[in-house]
Image (tube, rainbow, N blue to C red; front, side, top):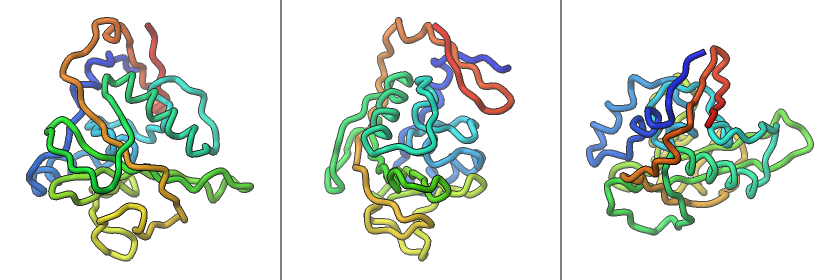
Length: 194
């Protein structure tokens, strides 16, 4: 089992870079990062990171939109980030702030068709997605169209938009949060202790 402090993970959070080329170069060595890690800007090789995992919420097979948002909010808190609701048209000017879009298929009768997806707005207001795990972030949907609005892009699942959110990397970290230790075992299961 590998142990690391949450502070180490916080240092691995990277807001989008102004240059599209530099942004793509930054992520090209992290091909195992999934869409959720990518949306949070977590530049660390945690394969299969799921919403709620960092905040130790019990994993479920499917989530309602509200459950998905709650899990993201809890993980963001553990990482020392802030999150708030936004809109597609809101302009982001702070270099430590970026927008994400959360998509969900919703709870279904069959688990085999359930999925959620995250996108991150990068340089020049372009949206990027990270699927599957072995690909670089892409600004194209499944029809190879540039993603200008995640709600209208084409994906491999029939998603609906849960919402747009603004994530902010906070420079000041509260001392009480530094007491968490994060453990990632060989099965990529994450737990933390106080």
